[in-house]
Amino acid sequence: MRHLYFFVFLLSSIATIAQNDTKMTSALSEFGFYTMDKKLDEIAIKKELKAMFPDIMFIDGAPPKTIDKTMVYLETISNVNEDYPAHNMEYLKYYAEGFSKSQKEKLIASKNAFICVFYYQNKDAFSHTKKLFNWVYNKIKGTDFVVYDGDVRKYFSQKTWQRDRVDAWENGIPNAMRQLTIHSYRDYEYCRSITLGMQRYGLPDFVIEESPCSNITNATQLLTVIAQLLFEGNQIKNKSLAVDINQIQNTEFKNIMASMIYKNAKKKAIINFYPNVPMEEGDPFNTIFKINFDVKGYDDTQAYESEIYDHIFGSKDEVTNVNHNEEIKAASERAKKRLPELKQLFNKGLDTETLLLKAPFTTDDGGNEWMWIEVTRWTNETIEGILQNDPHYIKNLKSGAKITAQQADIFDYILYKADGTVEGNETRKLIEKYGN
Image (cartoon, rainbow, N blue to C red; front, side):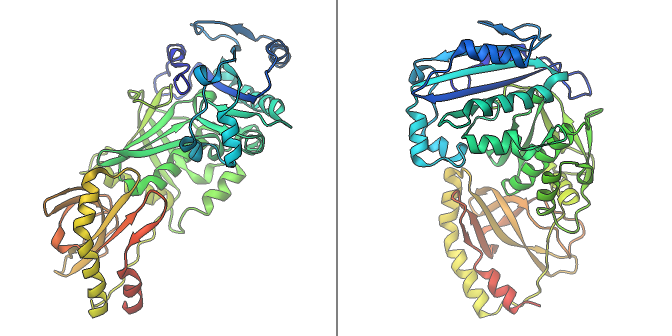
């Protein structure tokens, strides 16, 4: 199967990024049409593309060594099952939004496909991409064709293509929320989030590594904000970007972001980067910049990462003072009985699940402040994790710090499951009932 890596050979044609800048000299877009029982006319397509891009060059075989004009590789696929098969139903469940079961089955059974790979200069990236999006829409309008966007590895119907590719532009600039796929997954003790879809705009993709899995939402938001700022002309200089949500111009993006941040958000921060980091399996075939949270004065990159998120998006931490009455103690005991099973579950290896435990921390005046930690290691009776709250009564401790707790001291748990459901935290309602 050559689906995801069909154009691995194209990697050698991607131009390197100039030092201290994010702009490449060329861009690349891949589209695959699944046309069911119908075949696309390659001669007619060449005429359409020639009319749209008069200087276009049709290439065959090896990728171009120099991209000094618009170029395209076209291929008619007659043996779809062998040469360009659609993904299975499990994949389509996540990457074929809005498709019914019958539409997915029809896609998988498609007898015909057609591949287009476009190369163009960086200076043409936005104008060419917009034209190509409109051209693709006209090819699928009024049909049951499906488009596979190879840059983001997602499938689109006529309806979703129009929404995310044709209509998601304002003043010649797209909404990054509708342009990118962000893959987030567990990578040993932490999680890794990476963008796909920047290459067609002549820009690098971005990755956040060794991030607490409870930070996936914030990581996704930060990556999308960075992309939008670059789309709108902001630049990374000296490996840094001044992120300011107030500078974003796209109306839809601003409105959605406004609903996602807290009132205490400063909405700005300086983001640093490691340029040109090595590509891992499954990464986009593009230059990749890593967000650099390794800053002097912070013992852990996770602590600085947490502070960056608080600065840009704000946070909501509330302190509830409560005496542990018999009802609360009973709920806590029920949670403690679940710990051996949770330990076994964790050490078998979590995938997209996240486990939080509530543990006591000694305050500056000798009391206890109970806070949540995300578990990263659980050995015998010792639990290692990442603090999820900013303490109110402990000066020298911050959210994101690496901490250690003992199993015997755990008060409650939260298990965020892969299906989106949540288990645990039975004591919360009781604390809210009896607190303060």
